[in-house]
Length: 97
Image (cartoon, rainbow, N blue to C red; front, side):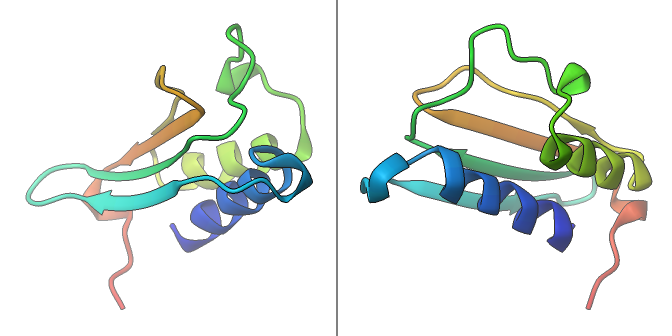
């Protein structure tokens, strides 16, 4: 889960706020007795309206998809100002430290 968060945050830093613009970003993790939801959102430039996670060919998205698959999870894009990426996976895929 940490690697997914790091990869998405690095992508956010690189693309969401070009030329060091200021903006808001949030990372949340929720999950009590059900699936875990890692949610990463920002108020940056956003993705193309027709962007589909499962079809993205960039190295970063391929890596995120691979990590999500290892947890038997799913990643998507929710409509928002900027970008909102929820990653949902079963609690059994989470290593608690």
